[in-house]
Length: 339
Image (cartoon, helix red, strand yellow):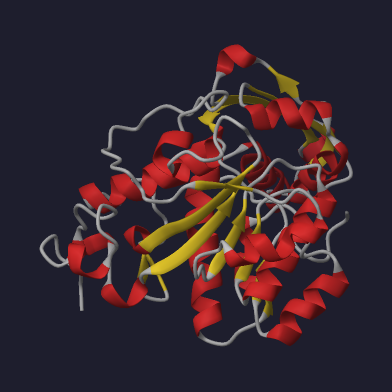
């Protein structure tokens, strides 16, 4: 059965679904998601779900349904952060609090009735967060990279709560064999690590390198430069640790060099990337390719996160635990890649 605009209010909490267009919503599909991190990526995801739910548009969506779950069926029921300016606010207000700078995308956002809770402070705080998940089926970890202990602590939250876990950061969670085994034993889905943006520098670079190989050229060298203006970029510049390796995992070649990430606040939520490939063709003749890419980085994350949380929910409902292979193409560093 499909939700119509008239029946939407009967299947969702008051104030959350003013409208639901049939092409993006189904009754059987409604899933509850908790998010960790109330930054730009969460802003893009929350705004996008509302946009698609209102408009019924399928622009920018690869999978209108995953296991019968539409884009508009995703309900954020809990949110966790550490910013004093965001904790205690309604989620739909908190996503616009600076330093968040992802723009409004032209959709109405009534009060969400989800108050941003204080996130984990230490491992002893796990049970408080478990209790605050509000029945979430999926826990989406979308905090900054570079905090592996925190990422693993939230994975522990998911295990104790009986929820699927999606790690969008470069910190090793799904690559941790012991954690992966615990999720499999518990029958809980695990997705990670580090999302590959919907159309970002890593995805484009990998596709071009594959094309070079498929067309019989010999790769000589390649490099990638990334500049961005979000707080995530600032964090990655200051704490690059696992991110550099994760980007190298994504392109899969030892002839690629990753320049250090650059934080440029004037770019706001946009990312600018420059890719170079030097190769040799027939007879050793030179081939040189330069690509300039400009995208809204949080949009690229949201376009992938909407699929990852639905993969996780569908697997949970079908009793499939452990790492989900179908998510590998949407990740930079799935199990088997380097940490």
